[in-house]
Image: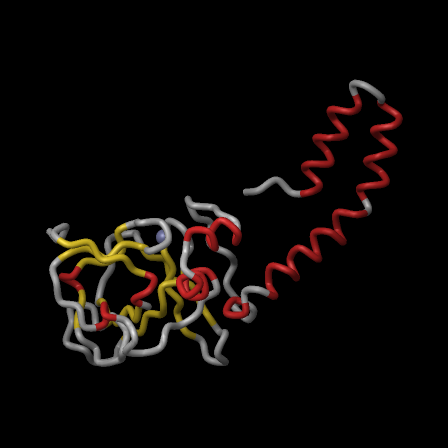
Length: 195
Ligand SMILES: [Zn+2]
């Protein structure tokens, strides 16, 4: 977790107190009224650039990789950022991974965690890469009601990057009858790692 403004102010006040107790206390009491406003505006700013997450009912997922939007933007392409960090969706049939059949492992394009193997990939005909299972523990599910219907969003467990959605009971002849509908751009395929 990033330190909140209040935490910073408390630290500043604590440090200052050893030098000038009264003055530090005055600074804190003056500043203490401000964090609420500052924090609120921070939340609004953050939400306004995350349209895909605006109506999500799920709490943010705690992940190992914690980066700011600026850090993600510096690392990802604009389209990767839109999909991975803003829960966007790539155009169906637009990514070569949709039809890819090589043996290997699909890693997260954000943090490189191994997410899916080619052994669980199948052709669903939906226009996006489809998998019937994940690398154990690599993908987290959460409820997503952003489009007016409740769907199950899937995100990378390591960095929280948006992958797509998972659907169950569609009648595909796979061991799980689940379809992990994953944006190809959220993935990075590596050959010869398939076991
Ligand atoms: Zn990731």
